[in-house]
Image (cartoon, rainbow, N blue to C red; front, top):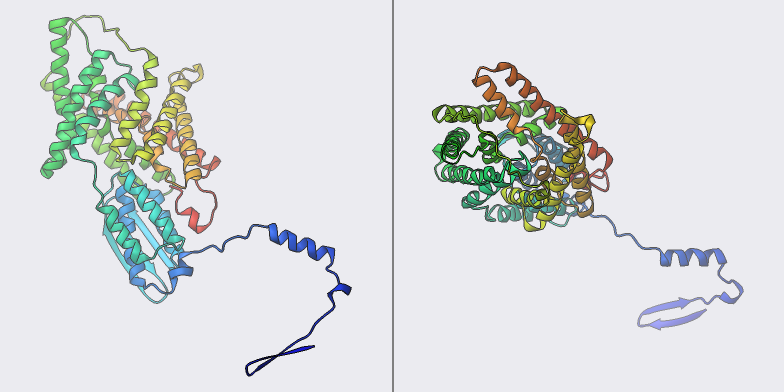
Length: 471
């Protein structure tokens, strides 16, 4: 026993003979194991960091604003109805219910003491750059790296980021028409040049509609009308002056490809399959109405300028299939720009679109799928979903960007316009047949995407923090 005096404090220290009581071998083993074992950092969450400190009003404001932004930047309805309640749960709210309809979101949130019931009008569109930024912000908030107040400020900054200029339509629409007439419709070189010009015409109409809001209701009709009118005019002049036959149908459909409702139609099938019946049916009828507007515009344009009927052999200067290696990636790049993706997202979007096209082209050549496009389409959608989910799983980014870039090449929008033309030209049998074909292809894309998600889930864990981002 030793005694030390430290000011007014007396400290007694008792010595023990450790030589007679050596450390046991097992204790030494445990200490070495704990020394070399990597210590896990405690997981932080929003509830731990800010759950009790932030008011219900701040949480409510953030959920309302994030809901409108996610819808505006491209999250499908069936994912939005899952993400928003999950976000509310991660923020410590007792109840967070959302009903997402095209154009409006119904909101019901409560924390046990306060509650809010209301609705918020939304605009649906695509902006993959801002969507990725919002996705990152949600991830940071749910992990407790930022507060609701700071997140609201960041949301406002993201909204103020510049959008793609309307003048880009004068580049994207012509290039889409040029490349799609070759890789999608197997047209000739001259068909592609005329599709380039018609794409420029449609792009000018989009710019005009952007500056003059009153033209928006007739956008689809005007685009299809002038594309059909000028295409038939050029085709007739080519026949009369040069005895060269152009394919008017391939040219027109390539020029208005971005306006075709195939993507919305496919999303409607996904929503109906996930039991989001109201939003799915509304989107379905919206897609059919868009197809009717385009078909009506084509029919009127063709009646004003009918095609010449001369007995001439069709042109045969078709490009080599090897040009697909050039045009398909370029088409994917143009689509990435159209969806306002960030340059860092371009490589994966181009890759997924190229793989999807390669799969559908390869499987279509098999005898078992001759005359049955739904089979190759399902395989291609499966490959697209698989790659996109792997990308999202590895990078913790959004899978919706590469998925939409890939399936837009497969979507059945032209079938809807063809069915409308069939009804307008009193060929109801053809119209009904093409309509069912359109729906079958949309369902095959849906099945392929669902199967890919079952095989590779786009997130690494099933916790609340990870479920948020399985777009």
